[in-house]
Amino acid sequence: MRAFAIIIILLFLLISCDKGLSPELAETKAGFSGTVTFIGNWNSEAKQTYVVAFKNPLLSIDDFSIFNLKFVSELIPFGSSTYGYSTNDAGAVLSNIDSGDYSYVAVAQTIRDTLSLARKDWIVAGIYTLENNLTQPGILNIPQGTFVENINIVCDFNNPPPQPPSEINNLLKSFFEMKKIK
Picture 1 (cartoon, helix red, strand yellow):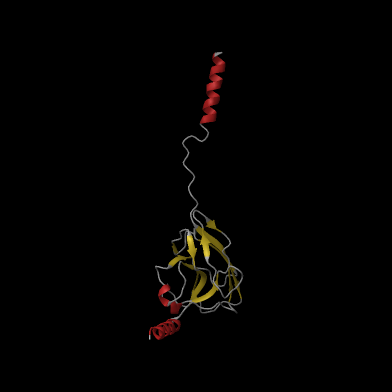
Picture 2: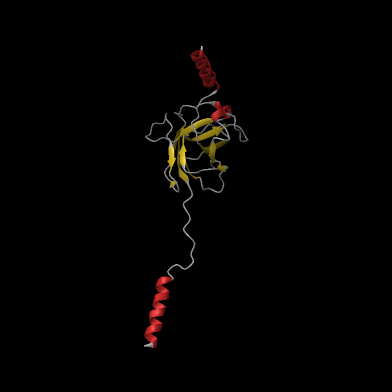
């Protein structure tokens, strides 16, 4: 009888101690990853190429700012035919990604040797799209606690996407806004 009681107590302890004091599972860190595919010949003058993500749309030159820029990948090696990236890469220049919408995810190149936040220093080589419309940026939605994969970008050097607003666009926008006021 005593042996039976010991066996029951041991079984009870084994069943009830399942995972002991194991920590709660951590929530998945919000972020995204994908592959960049390059088509055509690289610009021989390109010194730096990155995947970048902006939270808000690039409607004016002022939107091209450190406050709107949320991700800058590692430097993409010159001449690559494909490049895998992730917001979790340790070498990312900037990775400030939370859940929510990102209005502009792109591959940008510069002929400068140093990083610059001047819009004039960058050419957009490819954009993330939702329906393979290489002229219209797709909005990237990252749900709470989700890591989104397959945010793929095609950079066709022979057919680059439209460039985000420039100073000329801002001047025209200001001009037409002033016309509305009068």
